[in-house]
Image (cartoon, rainbow, N blue to C red; front, side, top):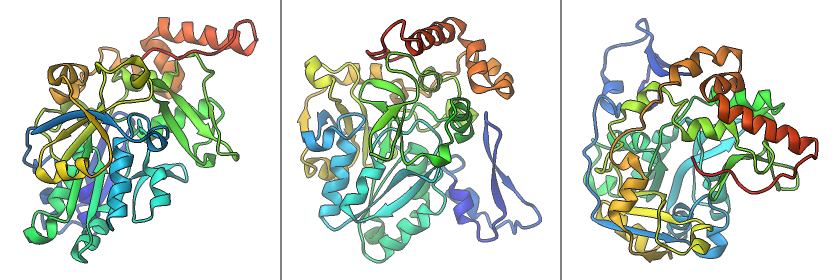
Amino acid sequence: MACVGKCKKEAISIQDSFSAYNAVIDEGKCVSCGACERVCPNNHKVPLNKPIYWKEGWAPDDVRIKASSGGAASAMMECFVDDGGYVAACLFRNGEFIFDITNKKDELIRFAGSKYVKSNPVGIYDKVIEKIKNGKKVQFIGLPCQVAAIKNYTKMMPANISENLYTVDLICHGSPSPKILTLALREKGVDIKQLREIRFRNKTNFGLSSQNENDEYKTITPNGVQDMYTYAFLTSLDYTENCYFCQYATLGRVSDVTIGDSWGSNQPNSEQGKGISLILCQTNKGMELIKKSGLRLEEVDVEKAIEANHQLRHPSIPPKTRESFFENLDKGFYKAVSKCAPKVYYKQKLKESLIKLKIIRGGGKPNRV
């Protein structure tokens, strides 16, 4: 959405059709200045650099316990703010996944956690530029395409100013339209705009949970039942079309630091259960971020890490059932999933019913897909 933020004539809007996100130009307002094309990470691909430093690791326990994985992002954010910098990243607010920027340590918790939905970064690029121009250091954390967008934004800035931008990208599967999440929650009787907070996973336990007034998280699907929203996400069923052709799902990375889950780690199960981050550094700035962050760093099997994170080689591949999913989405999210994966859906539906009737007890965790 860099184009939306860059257009001074407000001639660009985003058309969300569930299966695709498209930037639509109002020809009546457009003055053909080309600014939107220059910042677009798809039209103007940002140079990629292969990692020069591979590690896996985790943050201290008090930080790690609040994170989806090993807490690498949280540790970097806290260290950066302690050093007088600002952090820009995605958070959930008023039913939307948007970006904000802060230098307050107690606000960083809002940025923590995986978010399996397309976020809206409109407005954040200009805020980042403003801080950098005023001599502030900014750590920008986002998806590879969003990092590419902020880099295109800063392309014309003097090097001594743009050096104050530190970028962290996330190993990204792809992302679905937020309208799909809203639909899935509504069918469960949940109004996303009424939620204080939402989680998509807790370490290796994948499933939607919401925060109540006591700051406790309650699962939307009973414990031990595979949540269909995260099932659709993890099987690459519901991403928007562009994600399957992503130019940034490759070993060459767009950022100073890349982070993700260290699936297939050789660490003991006791550590894996707490979450372990995979960390790739492409620049000396990235190595500076990592080494100052207080992370415990361990050697990682590079080939194994790539094998477990296919987005380091190629974009996600759409399943054959994707077309069927979107054809049936007008009948409801869960109806659409049932058409694509009937065995999985009805098995979990039966399990959920038996738990609600107290015929069997909930518990355990669904396996990672």
